[in-house]
Image 1 (cartoon, rainbow, N blue to C red):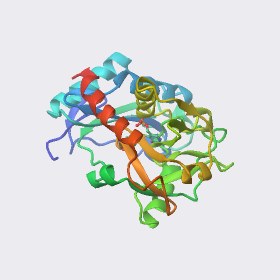
Image 2: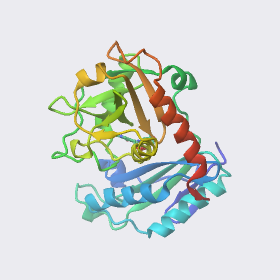
Image 3: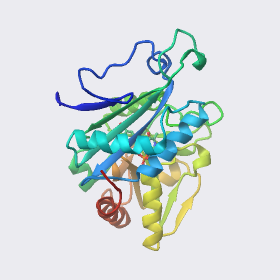
Image 4: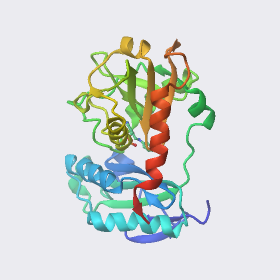
Length: 291
Ligand code: PXG
């Protein structure tokens, strides 16, 4: 997309002009936060929730976002409009800004903001029909007392190394465990199990990102009269689940067909997973902020 328009620090610029400094601490130290948001039929899905998480992430690392939430919401919509995008993906990034070398954020007087609106490639459709084989990554999820994985920061190397493990294992996704062997999430998705008609997902205190899609699926399940339990579980519960699926802005709801070579259920997307995916694809067109 050579004629793509990017929001950059209050201006709308071409892709070629959309450059940030090598002295931005986002580049030097991964110092910053981001959001990934979806646009469906001209509606931004759960924009308020994404902005709330962005502001919470920024607050946790003492990063002042140099605009109001209302201005940010407007910039997201305007970036979509300028790109004539109706269905796509919005990447919202707040960087610590430009500053001299050194870890101190005080070296950076003003945070940077950029917004990219683009198309996103989901997993190939065949995986939504047949389920996704995944593995467990040997890489443990960062413990919340080292750096809270609930902060959606520009430091994604913990997840990227796990993704490399997945790719090396010839699959597209990997589960990440915490130091006690409890399942936390996948590299860029939350995880759910179905057991005896109930949903189970790791509680947020264990460290998974509080996914916007996770929240939406929990609401949908409640509407459908499906009980949802937020409880820690191990790989044994995963291997013996009736169904398993992942949720995320990019992935939506995708069934897991096997984990570490163990077939999940009958190895095909289960009835509850399929129902939740159908309902999810309905609500994304019904809800959202009109650009
Ligand atoms: N866990 C992690 C670690 C994530 O990064 C999720 C769960 C799901 O959260 P949401 O709010 O999306 O339901 C994420 C989300 C990308 C990309 O560009 C990454 C995410 C979302 C969208 C795009 O790789 N991560």
